[in-house]
Length: 381
Image 1: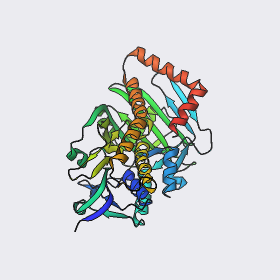
Image 2: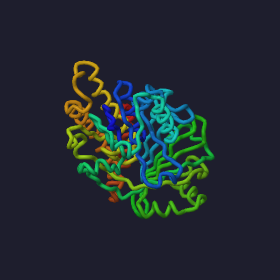
Image 3: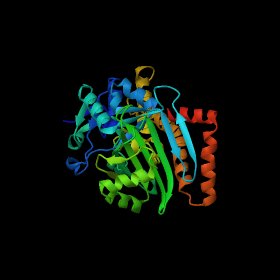
Image 4: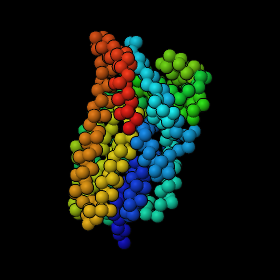
């Protein structure tokens, strides 16, 4: 027999689980469909780390899913080097930090544990979900969402000529809660390296995201551990001393993408909505990807919460809610989306005059405290 739910969430990653927990607190009946790709049983070690802002921290803390200090390292300093003498530095105005570098597997496990103890959430396999009915289906399946593709949603994709290489390293010099980033021009084009502090305030462990031209990324991935670490030391100018690779390496192509429509209706009249990477992708240079996905589900949950008051008579798939959600998130995303894309394209431009201008801009920005303070507030959420 078909099971009836208020909301069905397709995709049980961090965005999907967070939404399920938020909606369960509103006493909505939630189906959470596990998203598994072929070969997941042989899935390699997850080496990702995310930079989460204060809005994301507050949201996850409210759900009691914020990791312990050793797995959520506060960033006290951000130092960014341009490709020809440019430099800027941000310092946290409080001991709390500018942002927090969170270990992805740890956060995933905490969200999964919280879901298991929530009676309003029913976890389903893909096969089981075929016999469910829901007023609203929220698609959180990631950038390669099969449900979004089946719906025929126009997903505009603009590939960058870059792949991201991620890994974990141990540093001979403790990170001292610094997030470090370098823009450089390699023989094949723009390279962006970020080293992010992990393991707590006193640790010597860092996560890296190295955005490279595709051929260069393949070459770096093929290096043995010692040669890879040596290449990293050169790219990071030895700021954290000698580096030792401590994990496997992962690689994926980078793109800018967004769905033309984030909400709509199925043939049976029930509604659907996109959230997270199923709705939008951006370059990782600003570390905002997961923050934007969490902002999506926080907005959707807030919109649906009005059912506790004057909108009690509307079901979760009412077009009134979905229009509000889509308008709010598209407007909230636009500035960030454009800024990240613009910064990537500015540093990718090979012209020497543009290079001089962008590095002059970095140094000028670094000497304007009011502008830096405003930028920090935006980044901190």
